[in-house]
Length: 384
Image (cartoon, rainbow, N blue to C red; front, side):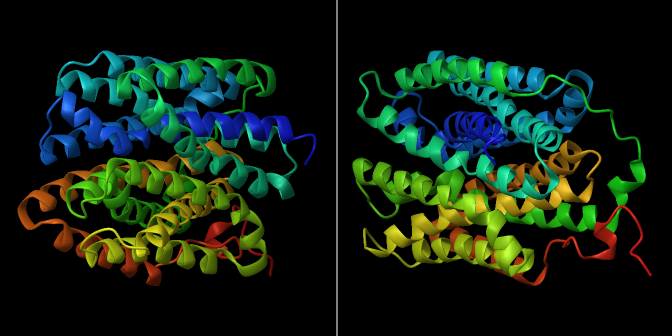
């Protein structure tokens, strides 16, 4: 693990920036943004969806970009997109400009995960790859933790925070240039693998899981403040707790080895569903919110790690492609979920919207991802 530690730290930092700062900080800064640039719930949902749409577009091209130019250049472009988008957001004066900045920033996480999966497959022994990949994936929680003090305790408000986030993104370039491999991986040309039963099942699971997760990650802070009347300082602390709990996702790899991928997947889903139910039946601040936000953080990061491991293993000769498919459909589900939740939130209120999304997430308990032992999950036919 020592030889792969610099790569793991670099990947962890890049994921913290692209997911925690450039993507998920939007939900936390939304109430403050609303004071400067008034947004309706529908507009907020559309802007959040633009970030998810950008992610989908980036994921589609990430594996080809990494195969043609190497994971290092792909990661450099990733950090530059995060910095550029955040600076555009800092200068925004209208919902359209704000959405454009969030769109550019949203490209960065879509480029990051497949590129890092490729880097890990090139530089890390096969038996260590799940552990390194899940450690890198947990960087999201660290990014969320970092975003809280910068957003709420730094002079200048959310605009200054976006500038600081952009500077951190540029600083990460030093690690990327030093520790990520520059060599290229030949593009996998076996298109049949993209139509395999394992890939199709993984894509469906990722889409619906992403759909259900959009309720918390796009509207969580807004629901806490508008529906439960939680003060902004306490909302930031709860968001900090959610991100901190997400770091526990580093244990996903060892847990999969010990208990199997299906067990870890189901627990992660439950951790995502329970918070929505707690929010549904809450009528103000209560101690149950601490458990809710913590479960939401660890549940989502663990679930995304399960999808990452499944995607990378589904196409071993092109792990960036497998991860790209899993994360593309995850983000597509989040984009659709953000739009639909925003509309339901306006038309029916928070309780009905949260309940419906909780039911959708719970239904996925009966639809598990492909395991490496499944015949359809292997590139070669099972031995007789």
